[in-house]
Amino acid sequence: MRHKKTGLHKKSLATALLILLLVGVTGSQTASAFFQDDAQQQDKSFVQYKGEVLDEDSKRPLVFATLTVEGSNISTISNTEGEFALKVPKNKSGGTVIVSFLGYKTKTIPLSQLSERNTKILMKVSILELSTVNLSGPKDARMLVRETLKKKGENYFDDPTLMTAFYRETIKKRRRNVSLSEAVVNIYKTPYTSDRKDAVQLYKARKSTDYSKLDTIALKLQGGPFNALYVDIMKYPEYIFSDEAFDDYDFNFDRSIRVNDKLIYIIDFKQRKEVLDQLYKGKLYIDAENKILASAIYSLHITDKDKASKLFVRRKPRNAKVWPTEVAYRVDYREKNGRWYYGYSNVLLEFKINWDKKLFNSVYSMSCEMAITDWQKNTSNKLPRGKDRMRTSIILNDEAIGFADSDFWGAYNIIEPEKSIESAIKKIQRQLRRAKTNGGTSAP
Image 1 (cartoon, one colour):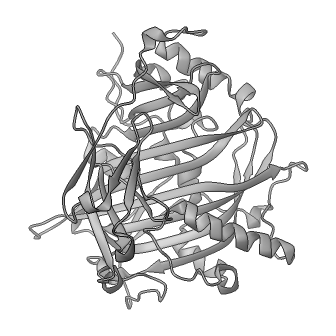
Image 2 (tube, helix red, strand yellow):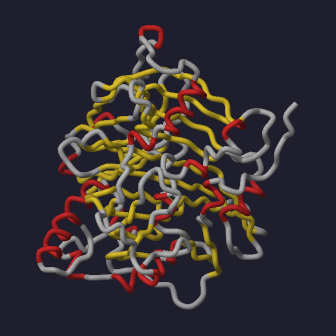
Image 3 (tube, rainbow, N blue to C red):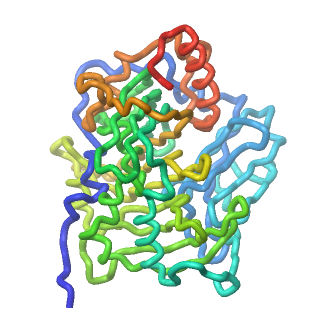
């Protein structure tokens, strides 16, 4: 019989970075002029719709489901409870919202059918029976995952690559925005077969914070873009499927779907019952023909909230207990000329703070997402000098002021957390091209 384990593997994704930092607030509390405060959020020219996105049969929440107002750049995603809040200008309230989730049939709903408080959106599974598929590779789910990990040298970028990425991180108290930071970074991506870690260089950044919305603490996200970058399972399998941890998981076929005419197997994975480590559970979306991981959505399996708290909380007030209630991850890959590469990732952390002598808990969420906007081969294979590299311990909220540039952000000078990251990227790409033309950027 296998011995049960406790704690976490040394190379777990949860131990790669200290994600959450809580410190007591000192000094005056100020809000950025760029921040959309509650008065703006309650603007009568907007309507905010709230609800849940659920599996139609099981009624379980769908994490990271995307809701987009058709014909606009207004978008949001559901949280770990499947909940969403979508803020829409009243002049678009006659439109429709497109709801999508990988492995489910896309749904189009008139905004008039959504409630401002409690809308339940039920999604139907997109099914292609496995029995109709002529498998050319291993039929065992565990073997399929192993082979996919082994084939990263064949299927993913094998050259050093210089990428430009847009990064955003948000802190909320329940539904109220507390802090938002945005940055453009250069990622010096090493080949997927290399053990050398990627390097990151901060190019431009800005922040907006209003600590008056917090209790008596300031929350900060430590690690910045590395939190999103290390979700790249194919580059960093050691943080989730290390040789040590791989046998601690059960893998099973869920179903198969078609995405862009490609047959995709959905593989469920979760830790074995006898394993007490706080590992992960979720779904892997694997290209059946070529054994390529196209996407993954998974979460930390929290079995002990006190141990989980030690993973994410560096400092906290003495009169408070803090623990994560959910930690979820998503990574998507893109294909170019037959090779795949990291394209987008999202991390969502929800947690509670239990204050001594207070009746109610405080509920917070922290999220970060990063998307690649451009890339080119790094023919020189050079990495930035040590002093120019971002540290994995960076707190972007503290560093952003040193990289602020009002000319770069231009007319796009209001941070709009309800707008999709794709909307921000379009504007950022125009600024990058302009800066490059003027010789003022190191971004590709």
